[in-house]
Length: 294
Image (cartoon, rainbow, N blue to C red; front, side, top):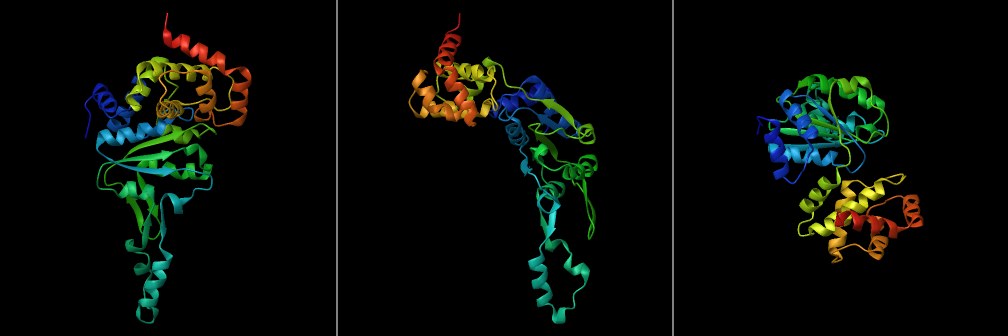
């Protein structure tokens, strides 16, 4: 499915339960229209991965995800040969007389996410998640794929994309990415949403939560983000916490429920200690006052 305008794509994303800001909707539209990769950066939990999932839904495309990590190499990301099957083939062949071409045919190739995306006949959204966690060597390897959408396999030659996938790279900025990679991508920084937008997101993601509790929860999370925390809560944590509050049957906040559920928001012990030492009561009072309005 193709979209004729940013407005059309933005409306489709909203209808699929993802609320992008205008800049993100524009970046995704240009990525699909110009067939350019887009690099989404931002704090953890602001919706970078969810943006790729939502784009796949509205494009009616297959989502292929490559989760990056330290030590990721070609065998895990692109392809490897099925050595066990090759050995079985040699043993089954009469007197072991098999040619190299027979051993390195496509039937012995194990396709990993990048090769799957290149060879796919259907529409694909390729998500290269947390590229900043991969080694610099792997980042350099990606340049051929992002420039020409092709992969070279020595035994088979160069394989070019049958149809270009929509490519989204995400980064939590744990390290700086190289300029060569950035030049090949459109770029968008996803920030924490405004209070009003976060309330909308909570109400969308947690049906039946009620506007009052949604606003109180979002207000308290915004208060936490103003503190000097090692890992401030993202939108994902806001949604998880609000679901926890709903599961507990809460209709509004108080100091006790915030204290007992704080681990849904903060995942670092030092942050938990800092918030508790600073006084949960103040956070709750501020959140209630903010939610009550003028």
